[in-house]
Image 1: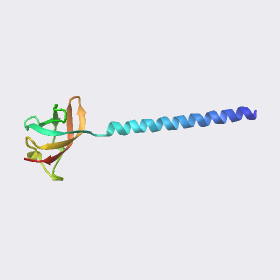
Image 2: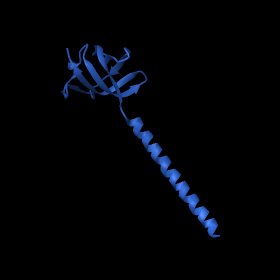
Image 3: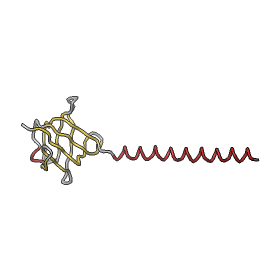
Image 4: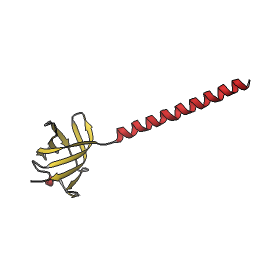
Amino acid sequence: MKRMLSILASLTVAIALSLAMSSQVIAKDAKKSNKESRLSGTVQMINKDTSTITVRDQNNVQRPVVYSGDTKFTYRNKPGSIDDVKDGRRVICLGKFDETRLMATRVDIRSGK
């Protein structure tokens, strides 16, 4: 009888530990999905009509970045605007990818001509 209770207690502890560990893994996955994506490169083209900035990344691939009225711009670590984004300037864009486009929440302009 004591042996049966010991086995049952061990089994209960094992189940509780496995549930606790699985909830930690789920929480880590949720944090990863909330993390913003980053795209950095050189501005190739700006289209204010479609609110799109075309950025050439390190692999020479041109990627579209879409901005909105909620997008925050900084120029050399100071508040900026879309007017500070110019061809040839290096930018770091943060946001979420919508298939191939980055929906920017922040655009940091790093260097200028």
